Image (cartoon, rainbow, N blue to C red):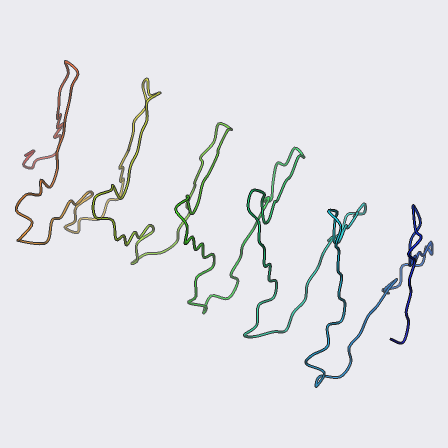
Length: 231
């Protein structure tokens, strides 16, 4: 090692301390590590090992700037990789306790219009939920703003055999709705606002649409205002 520091008797001190109190506004680094040779493919610039049950890296960012900024020129390698053996905790936790009126707690952006890859991919090989949204505020839990014109906004391809692909339970409803399908398009092209299609002729036991009404009220109500067939 070019520099070897051992501080086996430390209690509250630090093995290495670098500080600057300069008021100069020139762009600079207080501490800088550089691996300058491109052929040194086995060299890790900074290796931290923490055997104790404490933070491996702690960043206390007090100024109005980015706490951690990664600028990578990698084209096929992963920019940020986390490998965990977590059993009961959280692998990645983003927590914001400020009164935020704009921006996002987490933003995943694919900025190149020519890119055709997936922006966010969630893979779950276990039996738990792949995505769970616990929304406690009075706002939309999931809001989708899509500019696509010829592709599906939501596309579900499922291998379920005895389960339900989409299951909605709304036991607290008073004057609201479980689902609302609404279109105000003035286009005169022939189309269906909602289509239920059983495409296999062998599925002889399949009912395309079942409506069950246990209350003393209308099971199906059609309000046809245009000059066309209601049913």
